[in-house]
Amino acid sequence: RSGKMAKSTQLINNEVFQAYATYTAIVLLKMMLMSLVTAYLRMTRKAFMNPEDTASFGKGESAKKYLRTDPDVERARRGHLNDLENIVPFAGIGLLYALSGPELSTALMHFRIFAGARILHTFAYLIPLPQPSRGLSWAVGYAVTFSMAYKVLKT
Amino acid sequence: RSGKMAKSTQLINNEVFQAYATYTAIVLLKMMLMSLVTAYLRMTRKAFMNPEDTASFGKGESAKKYLRTDPDVERARRGHLNDLENIVPFAGIGLLYALSGPELSTALMHFRIFAGARILHTFAYLIPLPQPSRGLSWAVGYAVTFSMAYKVLKT
Amino acid sequence: RSGKMAKSTQLINNEVFQAYATYTAIVLLKMMLMSLVTAYLRMTRKAFMNPEDTASFGKGESAKKYLRTDPDVERARRGHLNDLENIVPFAGIGLLYALSGPELSTALMHFRIFAGARILHTFAYLIPLPQPSRGLSWAVGYAVTFSMAYKVLKT
Image (cartoon, rainbow over all chains, first blue to last red; front, side):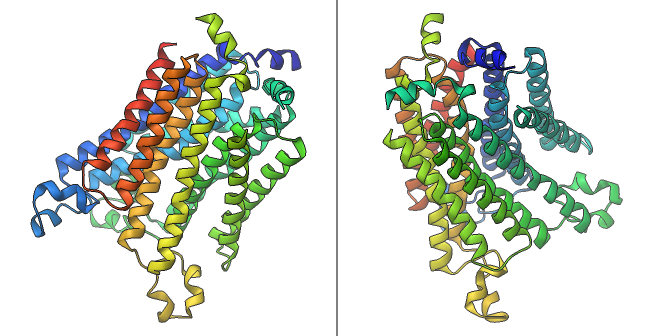
């Protein structure tokens, strides 16, 4: 095992690390897109949180009515927070996993299933799809991260 | 110093990095468990945020009454967010710290105190224990992360 | 290209990685300071979320009145969450970017603009400054992270 592990210190030429980099960049970008979804919904629904954001709608009461919550905006924000709660552990544990010398094919399977599950989760949350689509896609991503953590702690 | 630092580039065989990997995996898993606590409380308290989550309770008004907040669910969610706010900086700064060539014993002390403090913090938040238990356990983890950041920026 | 990339595996002696470590530590510390801002505002505004936090103000109704939300506290909490949503992708994608062999001057430009934009964003949020200061500082940091992700996925 130590032979394989020593090899994996050459981070950049390591195929597993390359795969980690690609899929982590993808899911982090996907998470960032939630900011744009929220911003888009806030502007189309005219639902803001900060008084300074409604200043362009005029002064006083006419602007104050846009300081309100909107169900679709709140839904996008919950999806964003759920991404933080799940993609952050994936990125952290995935880095340690990629450095623990896994087989490339096993690692790719973990990364791809996670990325696919989180993309499905976003569609299930935003459309929204009937349950258990959101619950299942969440659970699949969660299980992948646990499986990687098990490998890290065993090593 | 540069001799010690060069050695630490052999990430995987480095004992400090191994310790970092172990304790970071532990606190990230602990953070992930907050999702299960929240999900368990939502189901036992019947308190949901999304209409599609209450569809199995029937249609119309009979399901709508479960779209509500519950103090215990909100408490678990605040604990989860507090984990994100504190464990994310630990994981990021801890990685840089582990690569900055600290003594193994010093590094282990940082990692262990942080992990212990965050586990205490979770019990203090969920039970809940009277203050200042939650405040103190939060402050200890915070101070450990600052101490590691000081070492990183000095190096 | 592969020559430059091989060199960058010597993490610690790598100037780009050193720059990444410095600026990531700075923005993570800045994010952590939001906890202190929130705690300070909760105590001066006497606005708490957990009953155990108000126990020192006496029992029953006299303490219960401090279980309330305050606009300034909520503003600091939104700023903190916005940091999480933006600084986490920067730290993750920035690490992969630093390992992808960028020019030092280009990398420094990315890291410095991001750090500056996020510090401005915090002032714009907390003071608050009139829009579009907060929106623009957010967008600049967002664009920097996208630019780094583009380099990572191209490599």
